Every structure is written in structure tokens, then in C-alpha cells.
Length: 343
Image 1 (cartoon, rainbow, N blue to C red):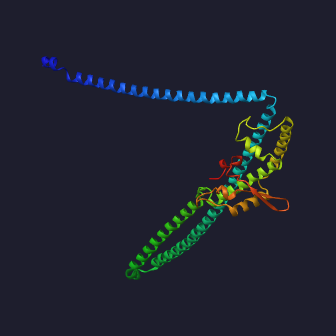
Image 2 (image 1 turned 135 degrees about the horizontal axis):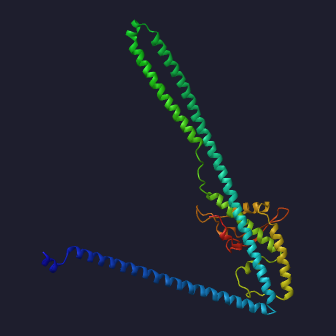
Image 3 (image 1 turned 90 degrees about the vertical axis):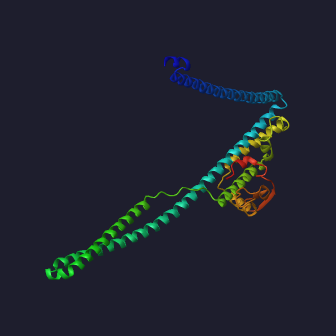
């Protein structure tokens, strides 16, 4: 036996060696997999570093360009005007965004309130129907209890001779009444449970605004964006504000130092007027209604009107007179309007 072991080896030792080889194989596979993941992560980080270096270089280039402009006395006042205009443009974007968000919240609350009113009314109707059934069941329970007591008294009052002939049918009738009473009590209890469940039921989740409401919101947003334009147009800087949000510093020459000072004064007046623009003004509502009469939508599910269908700037003076001019507020994305539309 020992000679066979010496020739062929021990089977237990072979199994143990095989298990060790398999363990080494899987450990090596896991290490290769982990190494591949680390190499992939290294490449990703290298790409991120290159991307960030590119961004840093571009920012440094802008800073150098701005320093050069500020160092030039013929351009320094132009740079000031540019950033004043851009700041006014950013203020306009924020004001439009606040208006849009407030309007959406108001419509959401109104829709939610309307749904709650309808839901509460439905609950009241259902609860009233259940209450009426409970009253009927109570009356029936009372009738059955009275009949059962009456039959029991009648059976008790029977003499032995009468009970011999009528006792069995009387007992069947009593058993039938008792069964009806038990079933009716259970039905009444079930109705009570249903009523309690109904009273504790939570209102349904709000599913969001419908298409018609979203369209209305977007028309109001366009109307308010037009109101902002009109405020800047009174100072003659509406186009300059829009241009400053699309171009870089040094791309626009606003003129001499004196001309730049004049523009800055108009910017300050426009900032004061901007604060006075009210989102609840009747003019905005009237303009939104007029836009709604002409707005066209590409499809039944679209909520943002086709820009060309609302490409008229509507002015309404203090006497209610209406004037118009071609201006595509939505199409030219004034004040970042596309980012605040209701979807």
C-alpha cells in the first residue's frame, strides 16, 4: 500500500494542491481585474487634468485680455459699461426666473386646492351614503331584536301541549331570526369599518399641471419678459443689455468716456425701474391674453408656443392704446427665457 502511495501519490494531497492552484488562479485574475480598473481610472483622471488645464488656460487668457483692456485708457470705460450692462442682464434673468417660479407655485397651489375641494366633496358624498346604510342597518337590527324577543317570549309562554305541536316551528323561526340578526350586525360593523377607513383616507398625490395651465404660464412668462424689455427700451439700452450677455468684454465699443458715462446713468435708472416692474400688473395679464389669441403650438402636447407666432412686442399705454413692433423675445432667448419655461 505504501508503495502505491509512493508511485501515484496521496489523493488528499492532490486535492489540496489543486485547491491551492485554483485559489492562486482566481487571486491572479482578481488582481489583473483590479489593475485594469486602476489603469482606466488613471486615464480618466489624466483626461480630467487636461480638461481642467484647458479651462484654466482659457480663463487666464480672458484675465490677461481684461487686464490689457483696463490698462488702455481708451478702453477702460468701455469695460466698465460692458460689465454694468451684463450685470443688468443677469438681474433681468433672475427677476424673470423668480417670476416664473412664483407663477408656477401659484398655479400648483391653485390646482392642488381645486383637487382637494373635489376630493373632499367626493368623500362627503361617499361618507353620507355609508352613513345612510348604517342607519338602515341599525333599524333592521332593532327590528330583528324586537322580533326575536317577541318570539322567545311567545315560545316561553306556550304550554306543554301547544309547544308539542308548534314548538319546533317556533324554534326554527327563532334560529332564523338569530341568524339574520348576526349577519346584519356583521354588515353594520363592516359599514362602520368602511366609514372609518373613508374618513382616514389620504388625499391623492397631485399629478402636476395640465397642458392648458402650462401654456398659460408660458404666455405670462413671455408677457413679463416683454415688460422687462420695454423698461430697458425706455432708456434706449435694451439691445445693449442683450448684446452684453452674448459677447465678451472688448468686443463692443460704446464710445467716448462721456458717452460711456451717459450709458451708465441710463443703466442706473433702468435698475430702479427694474425693481418697480410688478408681476401682477394688469398690463402683463392683458398682454398675456393678447399673446394667447395668436399663439400657435407645434403639437397637441406642446406647451411652449412657436416663437414666430408670438414675435410681436405689445406695448399698452396708460390710456389702454396698443402698439406693436416686431421682436421675437422667445426666439432670441431674451433674459434666458427658455430656461424658465414650464415644461
